[in-house]
Image (cartoon, rainbow, N blue to C red; front, side):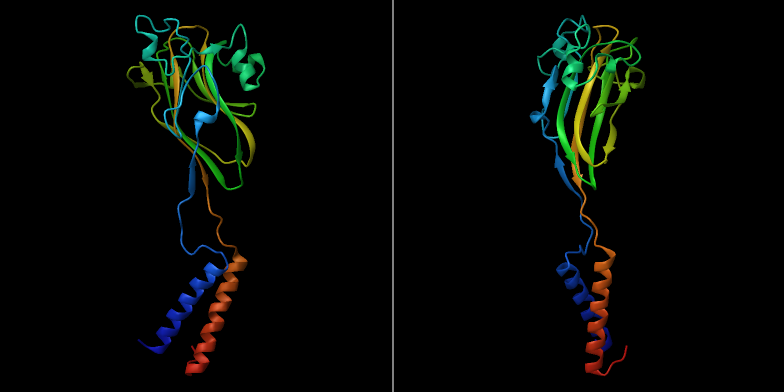
Length: 242
């Protein structure tokens, strides 16, 4: 190996060590993903949390909602969905005014989970979801709530794929949220304009990704300068100018 080549390689290795000493990452690593534990979230109605990052919710009230099929086919937990009308129990649980869930009709019953979550700068909350339904007339829907801002994920008109045991579903969709702050987040599903025909929301792969911050330009320039200085120093000792 030529001395000039050795010096170049030595300088490169020194630069990598310097990067580490400055706390600057020297390779790209995947973001740290923390799975949400929905079993610790507050629950209202028919809620099932089978594993980390997963939650199932339905608006089935255990009142022969899908006769002649049994309620157990569509109810996840054995608990009935709760009222949204005439008593706004669901809205009270979510901290909303009584009419807040009345989108494309009157919200009559439903289920939801909620929790306070801290999203730091650079964090990304991600989840996959699937809306499933037996509804054919009224616009039952699923939603994601950020404080008092309701984000409708889908209603029965979006459920165009055949499903089982439900009639239709939207299929798997993804959602990402990255606005830093401390929020009350909620997932829910509601029955619109009647108390029959179950609709459900299934959430999967819910995580908060904490992305490592890249090295600063100042740090990179400092490392580059250190590396070049060491190269000149070794070059002078060995009689090599470049």
